[in-house]
Length: 172
Image (cartoon, rainbow, N blue to C red):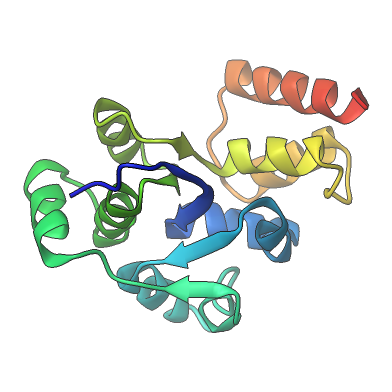
């Protein structure tokens, strides 16, 4: 079911992180962070529904690989994870590929953690973008834009992410 060799340089995206990164103008940088970036069918479908909304053009970018999870893995995840189809397909595909999965949904993240999967989210991707000096704004500006777009950030999470991004930005 799961590949024996982790493909941590591969990323499977759910819609939430992709939409947020598009709002910040960083979607194109994902191809600089990962060797392969996958979009499951339900995620691509969800993104295409919002013409001219953040993330809606992403399924058409040539470097995104659109791939479904195998039926057996997807059936298992659907039985065990009570979340949206995009989250289920992202988890199933990442599980099958032993890839990192990008999720912001709390239930889906908890399930991925239970399975021992490599996991990131919008903030994790943003931290990596800042660490690699690919971001065009300061960490505080990016965090403020995420908050203004409606992303729920507790004061503690905001402070922690800002601290990590600021530290990563000042290194090297």
